[in-house]
Image 1 (cartoon, rainbow, N blue to C red):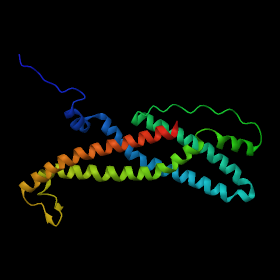
Image 2: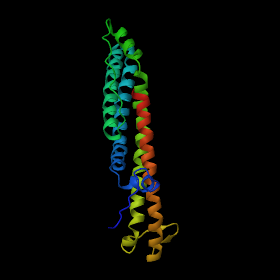
Image 3: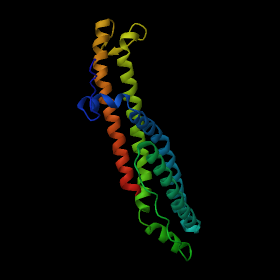
Image 4: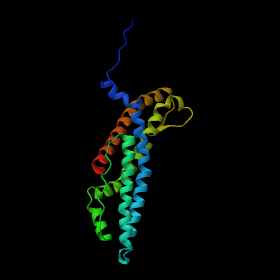
Length: 208
């Protein structure tokens, strides 16, 4: 009987090549792609409410706008917590409900600001925009370049590909660049997974 050998799940081979075919990698890509529109939406909503709130403070209406902004920031943070838990498996628990504040709007706003984690959540939502932009840039740069290099032996006669100052014109050049593309793809996948891990740890630190 022929003996079948398999690599252990934690072998070096699995750690190096496994992420390319693992579902976790591609779920991470979905999160990274979704990060930019989500981060942009958070930034626009919070910036609009804060700008309007502080701008309207002289006519007192600004207090209500700022209070509403605190409520919205809590809703957005819970939304992002759900996204991170679902796509990255962060396991961030739901924020405990705040005890009802009794008093006028000043007392309620002060209670909302003093609630543990409020300022961290607002800072997190603001930082999500540049992090989302970086996530999008990484994905739309690394993955297309990887695909182009890997498929070069099949496409170099159809699509003009220029590397440096010279165009790829021979099959040998295409094969060489394809081999380089295989290494580049592995490095890209690990880099994107690592960045997704950074995003997960950042969310865990800021949203607890």
